[in-house]
Length: 306
Image 1 (cartoon, rainbow, N blue to C red):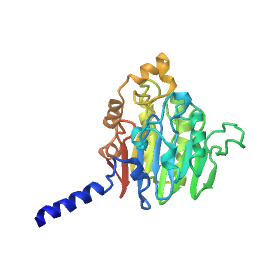
Image 2: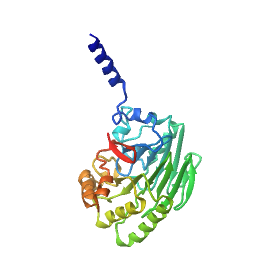
Image 3: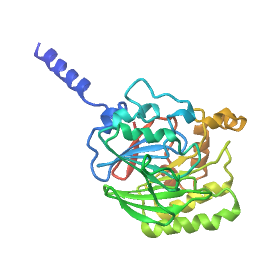
Image 4: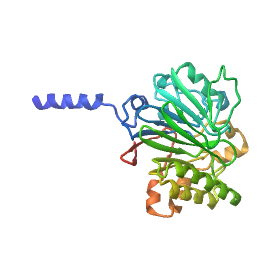
């Protein structure tokens, strides 16, 4: 009888305990220690990163009219790969937009401020919108600024916009935006910008790097750019980004080119990148993001999946 009662108590404790990696609402409101992070992959170049004091949302895929995409009925939105502002309204949210492309930015992110009491918009390009209705911070390339307790530095991206180097809560994050080496003439500029970031941060915890462009366009120069960034920044983990796979809902999929891109399997592209890595040490750093909504945990300098 006592044994049965003990199992009943243990079962209740197990059921009541929050399960890391299965409920984004629980994770969002759970204390994250300094130097640790919870990372959600939200598709394309979009990630959400929960640190000790902030929720950072990079290049959010717009859940508004541009994508004709509705918010999920459940509150557990990040686990479904989108942002439901109702679930993050009591957090300190910073939205960082690196590029003006519609897979990086959409007007659907502005209404979030109606729900979220403390939200800051940081742009690596100037959207030139009426500040009365759309308050934001624009950082020019190579500008450094303290924003809400974060040290933010920008770099010039390949086409337009900027990448972000962020120091927050004992972490150093590098989000490269659309910076990529597609043509040989881009190599010098790319390396120069990475060198600039390396002088600010010779080692980063997490690096988010573009690894392909469009419909599987991945010449060898792209991977070589990633290996250069790895050499200079010594990231503890590399998150490849940029694939327009079938899990990503944005209007480009309505075009023939977008449909072609969406039909390309995402996971094999990352697996190819891993196989091409110059060493086992680099291979071990590359994170296979897989489906939108997948969550990862950064602890003790390592990434662990859910």
